Image 1 (cartoon, rainbow, N blue to C red):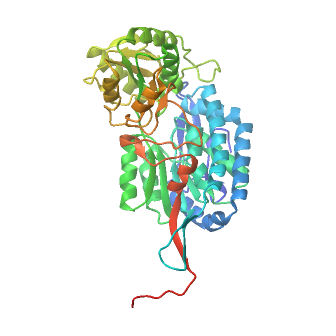
Image 2 (cartoon, helix red, strand yellow; image 1 turned 90 degrees about the vertical axis):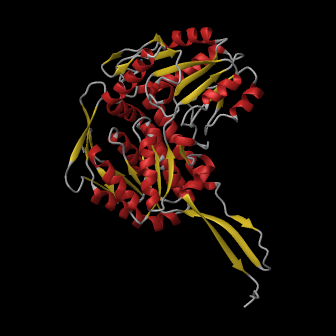
Image 3 (cartoon, rainbow, N blue to C red; image 1 turned 135 degrees about the vertical axis):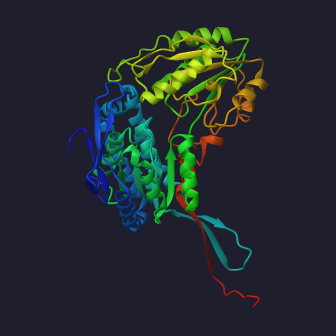
Length: 485
C-alpha cells in the first residue's frame, strides 16, 4: 500500500471499497494531495458491522488480561511510530509537528488506561427482601460499537473512540474522518499489528458525499448497540435523531464556546499564559478552546496587554517546521467562518488588539475586546485562532456571562481565592471546569464530556463503563420459594 493510500480494514483484511472508488484528502498548507483513501459505501459499512458481529462472542469472552496486553502492545507501537503519526497529522490536517507528537503521547496513555479502568469494573451484590435470594448487578459488553472520529485531534479522539469499548469487551467499527483517513488508519494499523483478532477492529473511510449513507447504514445495523461521536453539535443532533429511531444509545461530545473567567484577584501572568495556550493551541480547533475571556474590568487593561504580548509573538507558518506554533486552518470554509465572525464583530464596535489577517489558510492569532451579545462571535463557535474579551463588573455578572451560551463543555476560573473559585465553578454550566488553569486539558482517567448543546455521556475513566456496557440484574434463588398463586 502506498504511503499516501488508505484502505478499509474489514474482518482482518485490508481492502479497497467494493465499488473500487477512492477520494482525496488535501494538505491544508500546500494544497497537495495528502491521502488517497477507499471510498466506502453502504455495502462496505454493512460488511464491517457483520465482521464485528462475528468477532464479538470470542472477544467478549477473552480474559481482560489478554485484552490489556494487546492494548498495551498497540500503545507501544504508537509510540514507536510517533514521528510517522506527527508527519501524517501535519500533512492531512495542518496540525503542527508538536501537536501531532502530543496527540500520540496522550492516545497511547488512553489505550493503557482503558485496560486499567476495565479491571475496576466488578459485579455488585444487591440485598434482596426475598429469603434465600442472591442478587447481583452485572456489567457485560454491549456488542458492536461504532466510533465516529473527527480530524481536529485525530490521534487522541480516534483512539478515544476505540479504547474503552475494546477494553470492556466490545468489538468496534471505526468511521474515520474524511479529512484524516490515513491518520485514523494508522491507529487501526497499530491495533491490528498488536495482534487484535480479525473483526475486533474494523476501519471504514468514505468520501464526504457518502458520509450520511455510511453513518445511517452503521446506525441502523441490527447488531450495532452503541454509537460514539465527537464533532459539531449540528451533526451530533442528526446522529442522535437517527439513533433514536432505532433506540440505540449514543455518546456525544460536541461543540463548545469555553469561557475563561478572570476575577479581580487573579494572577494575571498565569491567566494570560493559560488564555494564550487555550485560545491558540492547534489554531483554536479544539472543542475545549478558550473562545470567551470573561474578565473583571478592574484588571482588563493589564490582562489584555499581557495576552496581546503573548499572542502577537506566536510563530505562524508551515506546520512541518518543528518551531511553528500556529499552522493553517483545516480548509477554506473554516477560514471564511473565522474571518466573517471577526469582521462582524469589528463592524459592530469591537476593538482588534492583534491579528485579524490571513496568509493562505493561516489566520493570525486574533484578540478582540469589547465583544457584546449583538455580535455573532459572542455566541457562535469560531473554531479558529480568535478569542473575545468580555468585561464584567463582578463575579456574579461573570457567571451570568459564562453561562450565556447554548454550549457547556469546558470552562475555567482564575482567582487568588481558591475556595471562592470552587463555589463559582459549581455554578458554571459545563461538564468540565478548571481552577487556575486553561480550558484545554484532558487525561485518560477523567469523566470527559459536556452539557447542553455540548453533548451527553462521558468518555474516560471508570465512567466509560456506564456508556459501553449493559447493566444487568441477575439473581439466584437458593431456597424454594412460596408464591401467592
